[in-house]
Image (tube, rainbow, N blue to C red; front, side, top):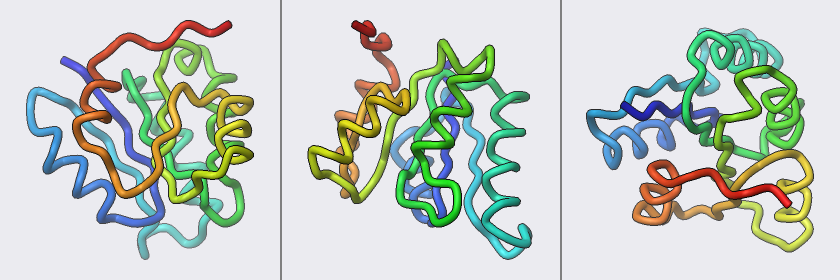
Length: 132
């Protein structure tokens, strides 16, 4: 069973992925909510849950205030389980500089919203790209 982890400041992204990725996928979502006191708590919660969940793929927003998705990706890659995890940017940022920065931060793929569901399905189910 494949598992994926959604980290986005907007809850609708997690809901959308659940709609397009029903069972047998196992998911864990971390979205900014009123239950968390601030964005720092949101990011730290996401990083802590990653360590216990160890998903096959992480769907990660880049444009988050405070600690952005680039830094979250770097921190995930620094964890033992993060080296083998596929990290996919789901972002509104699509300039060449944004893509370059995502590759440098450790993202495997960079997808610009709106979400291309078929491409995302192929990425989550497919192998991780070779790093050159």
